[in-house]
Length: 174
Image (tube, rainbow, N blue to C red; front, top):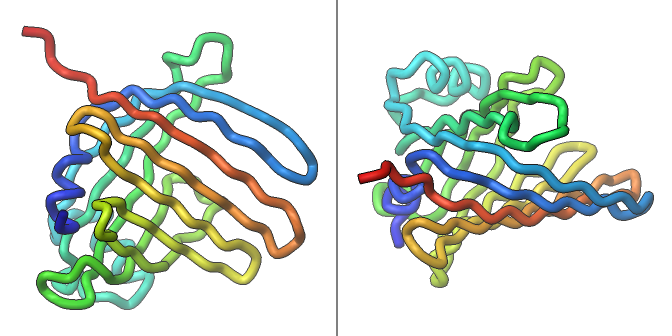
């Protein structure tokens, strides 16, 4: 699977369930949310702003996606809404490897850069390293309407957090 095919398959509305474990100290959490993933072209203001922060020309990008989430479907939890931007910068025209830029609407989180690879198993792996954290996220499709994700965050101070997501595409009723 090529990176553009993977991103196109991700577009749409999803119901997401997440289970997370914080290791050392031990703590478990789970949540539900609705996620809407939309494509951003190279002229979209969010994509342009993120590229400028990292001194990348928007024309160098292959694509961008905006993932908006809303956890109001998770009864009993405090309501959270937000979004993240992911920009893909391939190593070459048909490359399944390259760089990524990421940002969120949270002012406390800086934008990040890292790498991506689409493996022979058609899974997308995103890796980001900062001075304090290493983040690895793996995404794959068992079917067109089911997406799985795992995320491992390792702190250089000794704690780790792992998460598993199952995401079901929300289809329009006929």
